[in-house]
Length: 137
Image 1 (cartoon, helix red, strand yellow):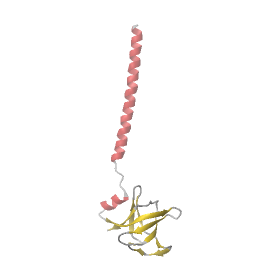
Image 2 (cartoon, one colour; image 1 turned 90 degrees about the vertical axis):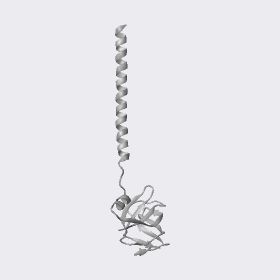
Image 3 (cartoon, rainbow, N blue to C red; image 1 turned 45 degrees about the horizontal axis):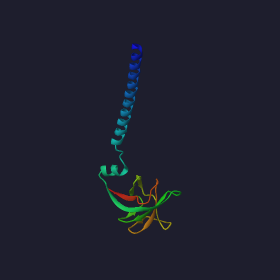
Image 4 (cartoon, rainbow, N blue to C red; image 1 turned 180 degrees about the vertical axis):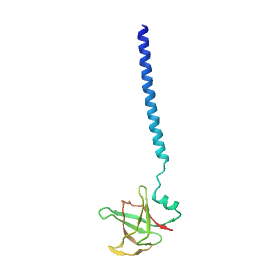
């Protein structure tokens, strides 16, 4: 009978060791996940603000044409010229680029003002209601 009890005790100890090992693995994984969450990814707009420049809202994206990589922007405030640097920011969008091409009713123009709906060539996908900001030094 004593042999049976010893083997049962060994089996219980072995099960406990497995449980402890699993628990340790889980805590290591959760600590790594927490560390990743704490490390904030610095977005384009955060970099601009950190550099001392300011952002001026210019318009709102109303449509995106993926086949030509162009966005329709309704100009709400300020003006925009070819050569200006802009940031387009939204729920999942945040990138910076230089304005290379502006179109108004399929005709290229050099500057846009309040009230116009313009076409902008963009390098990345944008969505409706994303906001376009001009970088002002």
